[in-house]
Image (cartoon, rainbow, N blue to C red):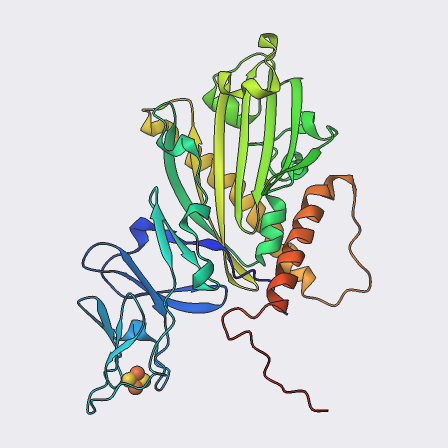
Length: 357
Ligand code: FES
Ligand SMILES: [Fe+2]
């Protein structure tokens, strides 16, 4: 059974990954051909010709249309409708490919994978810091994981793993026994904790230039299904700030956009937004290096977990106190899947049967 929620915006690519060439992307198991039209906007079409099923990405872009590389059926980049069948004048109604709604913002290309009628651009994830001059945005990289996206997402609402998986960058032993709080805040599941009066972790020794003890926070916001924002930072302990005054410290948002590729493969595109070292490209490079190290630590864990999950299991995995965030997340995903299973995504809702007396 699929674990994919379809009626949602997913990140298809960084804007820089898309140009006038026909490129294939796989998202929720669908093959999609993506390219820029002549006006610079993006076309995203089912990457399979309805004739003999050749991927359209093996064909040719002609203006804003795509010509199949086998017998030349041609499809409109915006609507997916067939505009030409070589050798005949009539265009069969069934000659079309699915066209996916897209939305581009802050250098990120989003794609709607469900019923196009439900695609609302206002629902694309955004936050004000993207355009606020007091913050610097830096696009990081894409982490490829041989793992189902649910495990990747759970890792992003789980501050407790940091002490054990990232002991030299994002965590240290001071946080091992600090309890995690969890709440829901509208669409977000929030898991957080503060580690007070402790040695700064490697990341903030590097950035804040902290030498004495700091208060450090970790707030994990997980938006269903696939966006996570990790708000973390540090401030000198003696400044005793209130929890909501985190902007006074060195504060970083690490954003993760998970794209489920298949049931066992996920791409996590990450970027960061920071309120420190705004014009310092060197800080960016150093941060990227630290993030890469940390995220590769996650990758190793998550791929090993995936491998074990696929092997026969004799009993259910146990749950402990820190699992509250992941549990709420799984519940929300299951509710959405149930909703999508029980409503017909795009066809005529009238019953296909007739009652007889
Ligand atoms: S397979 Fe595409 S035109 Fe024949
Ligand atoms: Fe991690």
